[in-house]
Image (tube, rainbow, N blue to C red; front, side, top):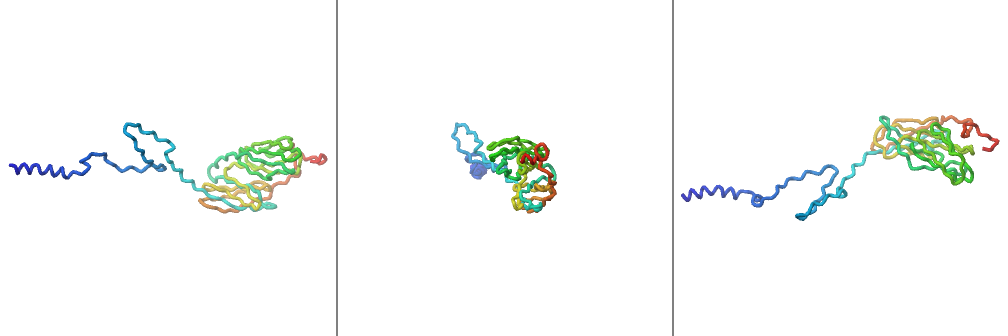
Length: 268
């Protein structure tokens, strides 16, 4: 009978001995941690004493990675043409398909009147930009323009005075002085965030361009209208050659601000 009792107890004892070690001291079951969402980094947890509230996570502790920089390209080229070269030509891009992003106004620009000249002679600005006209001569000037739809008249003002004008419509604006017929310059207003002005040799460069199909516009003060050509920009550098014409109509006379011929007998 004793032998039968020993046999009956042997099986439960064997099962107990075969149990894994974690059964002896129960603990939480550890599961693999899922990966963090894209763009975030898991921060190590600080130990918290029993009975104390868990501190809130400060927003500054979350390390959000910056999104990967958008791909961009560079367009560089040289402008040729014009009766005396294409230095100072204005170039800008618009999307070949879809809408071109709205240009943001630039910081206030300055055109100086010095030595009976406008400096710079050609200025390119995006729509909505304010331009200050500063008189540095020891004489009066009267800056105006008859260019539609951006005609304006700043009136007569002397040395050390600046008067401003905001240009909201795209296109060329010819600057004149109502007192000095020899003074002439241009502002070209573009409705695009991608623009530049060629140097004296006609070279230009446009950076940070989203890859895509564009229309390159090129204007020179001797051109009747801008020339255009299609260009493709990728993730790299693209080199193009642009051409301007010299077909701008020459004025028979330099007008005063009323559009009339100057009066030589007055000396202006």
